[in-house]
Length: 184
Length: 310
Image 1 (cartoon, rainbow over the protein chains, first blue to last red):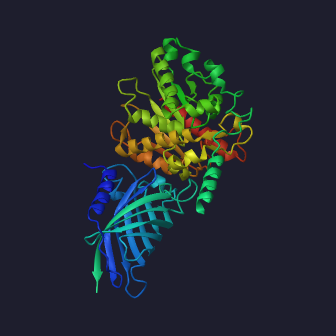
Image 2: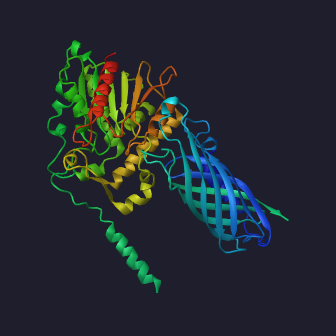
Image 3: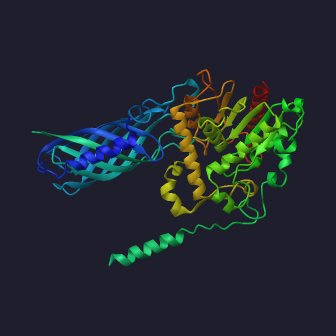
């Protein structure tokens, strides 16, 4: 069975294989849906799904609003004793280099984190947090309606032993492989 | 035009990365203050104090007490003092490898070096005939013991009776440690917020190399727990964890509870302790502690001894 890291690399290679880019979505509303693979520095893989939307009436192909859900249930906690923890995110992203195949972006995520400590004895510990994470990265458009986004982010509300969930780590990297749906 | 600016910035960055801290004589880091167990191991290690025990002595429980990262045997001195009038068990205080000496000695030691001292004392005690051995580990001492259990160190050896972990660290409270492979070479070392008295028993400066070792052993122990660790047959474990702890995140207890099982597949014991101290069993040289901290310390010592004698 492939390790998480190998999946991460494999999906990245898949994205690069479908280069070069196609362009031409600039004046249309778009929706990208995909799989998000996220790894906290020195901690868990938390994987899930992601969707980003750009409306043709509001800064099309530059402003993207999105939502994502990642969980260790689909990562490090899959078949192991790792803690099951879920993160729900809403995001706003600004993309540079319109119509180019490689596009830097900056993104702000807000959301909610919850870890499941399972046993009553751990009810004294904080296990939820509202989160705010700036994120920067690159999105590479593919020849097919595929794109790959790689970015790094920083959780501003990670646990410190005295407040906040201890399993919420600050620094993470993520890779999202998306399928673009163009809407009329 | 920008090149000179970048060059200047790089030079400033490199100049700020002085990896030689200003070590003072009164620090444990220096060449004057050493851990007392180095000069007088017979006062700290039961295997040295009595390497040829009678059958009766060898049947008494021994508590091997293990301190944490950057600390010294001082961390368990109060347990030794608590046990001073008891003749039904022994306390053996291990100094982790690379600790208790100079900054450079500390800098050179890996987590395997830290752990080697624990194994050496255990093996000396077993060779001498001591048959009822318990472990008491604080902070990183807990992570080192979990690693020993998970890596099969005790397979085929005399099974320890009990493991008592006080504020074990699996998840650091300061999440900066998670990026120390990136930041460490830039920082060179970290400076601890010790009191003047504590500087004689805890390193004032923590080389980034040792922080990387700390990260490595805690991540290793975490992954071992994720895979599942089983105690030897007849061995128990209890974790005592402060609910607020600026060094070892309390969530460490959750990971140990989920990952560690008895030989029959049962759960281990966990007590979440109403305290905001890291290694709440060490009160000496702390300011601001009160009657409830003393009561918690004594209750924990009594619980450890009561369980360890059974």
